Image 1 (cartoon, one colour):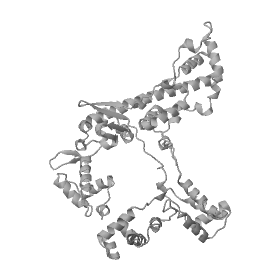
Image 2 (tube, helix red, strand yellow; image 1 turned 90 degrees about the vertical axis):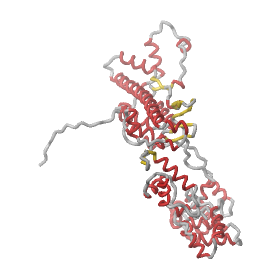
Image 3 (cartoon, helix red, strand yellow; image 1 turned 180 degrees about the vertical axis):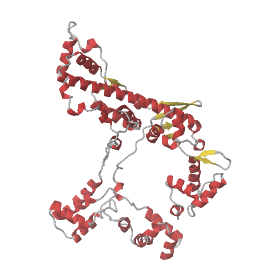
Length: 487
């Protein structure tokens, strides 16, 4: 039997203003301009002072009659500004719906203009060949099926099906294979390969076949590629009956090959463009923190909208259309005020958080010595500025600071503490720096395994387990000892 019950619950729910502030806080400076421009386009009650010139009233209305009333002026303004053009069904939704808690805005990316000449280059080379209509279409189908690296990842049978359905062309597999071989002769070398092995062999086949080093390189790529990639050099030397010096020559030839020929003539799809959110300067031993000017736009609420709202408030209240106009203008004015307040709150939060980080890591920002970085977690800064940890996290994850020693992501200053043998707390960044130095200076013919690295750290006073060394090494994208081995 079903029962009806009545419960009272106390829940925390973010207001539309809080959601708007959170989203603005995590936006980096490089994306803030686009976000402000988007808001300016959506809300006509919001203005950018830097784009608006405040003209003198007499100059703005040179032919204005001094006896003209405000109502006459507003009537002329309404003829120019039609409120019906702005009133839409969606405009009467609660403003909070515009700032829902989904991640749609987070998924947006700045559009980057790129020049993609890779496929055009291949098509131009295809145009120079004396091919029949069908062979030309097969070639275009193959070129269009290449990925950005220049590889043909799709099976030949799939290309045949595509030609049948899209071009109404029925061809045999051998004919497609023949055209593919023609395309594999195009520049850059290695284009149209179906695997890394085939890509390398295509490039090696263009080299001097009488050279014994090239012959040996072909043999290694063809028969011992797996052993070569795993750096089982001793096994290869034994199988080919060669010494380490000969293998080193072969290795150097293979290193000259391009494993991703498609990228050789194309611009990278995504380029990271870092604009620092903060600047720290050293003025005779005193650090000075400033906020990037882009974080402080000159925004204001439109004066004409304020005057319009006052005029509508004094108008007849029983007019339904007038009520709709008042509601529309009020929503836009409120939205503009909320946005301006959120931008100001963002500036204050950014400065407050960064100032606390600068004070905490004062010695590092003064000297640039990573060994002076103190162990620091999000809670340390959150307690210092009396804010939530999530707020500090949003600031640290996407903001950069420019110093005299380079530009750093704020997140890189946060690290866990490690206790040395002397009982002193140090940052794990210091340990990573020592690890990186040890690996950089190791004998590449006999790289240091993680156990040996742990022993070196222990000798320096850092008692760290081997698995911790492995974790730090992986975090720095450094491969295991066997893969660091060089000839």
